[in-house]
Length: 311
Ligand code: ATP
Image (cartoon, rainbow, N blue to C red):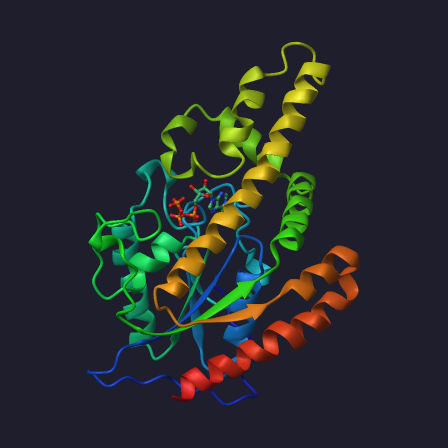
């Protein structure tokens, strides 16, 4: 564990046990960027009554660096739940392929399950989730955009999976994502990006070059401030970059939901949990959002997970 919670007064949580012929149980939390997957994964890991460890499946959050821009869950927010493949890789080692992810995350699943704990896969990269979970993975296939016989979604999985899909009505999510970009800017995204671009080695950090914010801000950081700082040209390049970051984040969310729906129609048994009201509350006034989260997201999710763990 990264840090441990105080369990001295309560009995140890039960371990999951598998006979050799049983598939490992794996909980998978899916959804578009910003929909609350990370929070749900930690809340559920604590609430489900079993010890759980989280495996990140967001392809940008795998790498060290750009913690604000890639929206990595912070250490206090992890609340002592151990996370794997989160900021562990060097972006200079290049982009991970789905086949690489299958190997790395598959080893993490085996390790967690061998210790009697529940692996929880969380992240928005659906091509990685697919490569990890499908029973037979064909590295050349493309189940999201391809049309050949090998590109069909396979419903045969190598683990016993329970899927939770956190869904938020798109216009509401998009409003929230735009506000999140403003909050990221306020909490240091630009400083983080300035550091990234000030290092001479940035072109070699190929793992992170596609991370939203990096391509959009390249011109702005390349301009430098030789002309005397915050002039009108510099300001308009900056404002344009922030607008593109918002647009590209909303586009990413839309593509992610399209991919999730493709997996669902390909036979993956996804439990959809509607979190729209939580986001409406968050956009209106933070105070009541937590209550709505408990009632509309946590309660149904806990029921689904407990049922799955008892099967
Ligand atoms: P694709 O087939 O488009 O690569 P995918 O399912 O493999 O999709 P996604 O996770 O949807 O992978 O990421 C696609 C792109 O979205 C990334 O290349 C990156 O530009 C952007 N992206 C994804 N996650 C993040 C993140 N956490 N922070 C910033 N940008 C991200």
